[in-house]
Image (cartoon, rainbow, N blue to C red; front, side, top):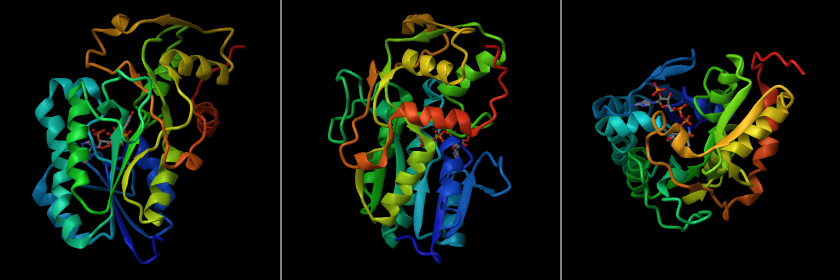
Length: 300
Ligand SMILES: NC(=O)c1ccc[n+]([C@@H]2O[C@H](COP(=O)([O-])OP(=O)(O)OC[C@H]3O[C@@H](n4cnc5c(N)ncnc54)[C@H](OP(=O)(O)O)[C@@H]3O)[C@@H](O)[C@H]2O)c1
């Protein structure tokens, strides 16, 4: 169990998952929330790719747990800037290893379904990774580095949804931004399959695994699966926009200029170790939509 007097360092906490993780842990013990994007009053600056800065920060805060969320998550940026991607996604993990090994510190690392090649229909925790993109490769390199810590907890996430209008950089908010701009027809791929992952449920999984002093590899996405098209259709229904907005199926070739990083055909994750901690992605999406004011005018 995490004790009130203990200290948790969270990296990359200004992002979409960090928002949920911070609010979930902040009353459990002393939390040091850091990011290189200091977008909240409760965040401190820490760039995980700078080993001297990391070392100094660890000396100053002496954490009992490290929850490492910092990463470059834009797949196209990673594809065109591989050195930066590796410096943060792999190097950013390595900078914590000496401290974690020396102090037996539980180290949480969030990996991705993108470490698989998508040739199988769905992936369990024991399936063999074979990443296709620079993002996937650099995240898998980070996963291998994290595995070298005795008390590492590696949680592979799926298609992230959470953080709300200001922090969500991914699919749900990209669709919502099109709707805000007045789109009446959305083109959405139906040849990419996956499992959405709700940041607020993942935050609870992180807390649970830290409390249990667990270690090993886990899958932390929601239950159920679908294509991007299925997710967009469900979102439009939840927003009561079915009669106004048409969702058109396209294949990945349609977006080959803007989304050029290679993506697996299937990123479906099976959660065989902690199935009791997850909910169906549709239930989570419904909750997510109600949680924030998305500033959409419902014209139904
Ligand atoms: N988003 C997804 O779909 C997804 C799926 C599976 C796994 N994950 C993993 O989940 C974790 C959390 O990601 P997220 O979904 O919350 O994405 P996010 O919103 O992009 O959050 C990541 C945060 O890390 C920050 N960061 C980047 N480089 C850094 C550095 N060198 N030092 C310190 N902070 C740095 C980012 O700042 P900037 O915004 O300024 O870059 C951002 O605030 C990541 O490890 C990610 O790889 C994400």
